[in-house]
Length: 316
Image (cartoon, rainbow, N blue to C red):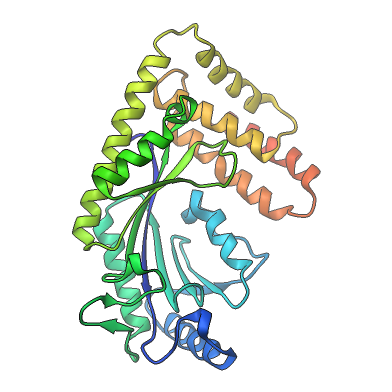
């Protein structure tokens, strides 16, 4: 098992053949597209609800991808639907008329089967935009064909520390046709990166993504073994200091938390500290809930975030 892997995401994009792409729609066409999607989702086997700005995202399933889902809610004329378990989302009216996403940790085949079934239900009474030569038509040419995109979220702390990310990006693009990018613009204190693969057949994409994950795992493991070979190194000390701060801090900002979280996960990944990866990963979810719940009171949010982290670390 790849201990650096956080979660995976499978997406499928479709457009209605009798409607333009969303960026060319008028108000009536947008309402028509939304009505079709809403009616299908509310009448299917999978139970969906519409999510509105301020509701927050069901982090139990969305996990580390939740911030991307929340960004959708801030867009005008874009609608977001979430299933009851919070691991499948349908986006209506963004780049494409319909985008179905499944966030998962298990088998890719099941996730692809699930999103294809949901898309088929939405388009049961309508024809999707399709060209015999190019396949399913989407707003992004790279997705033309299957309309499927596979991605994975991976933690690369030592690759980031040693400034090897650019080299890794180039290697992945050349050898696997996958794209590596940080999950946040500017500083990336969490050292989390997303690997994306799109445009090919589903089987080919799965193979490319797995190949990319294996390459990054090998590189990160070798680098970590080198920098953590001495238990008295400064990095070892930083890992244990991060644990101490998270256990005892009374106030902590989101950026500081993500930086400390990354160090602690590095320690868990390489057994440099006695804590499980599962325990470390559980820390991000409550902090995200606090981040959403107290959006307009940043100072109070920092205190509550610290309280939540201390409570979780004390739990057996």
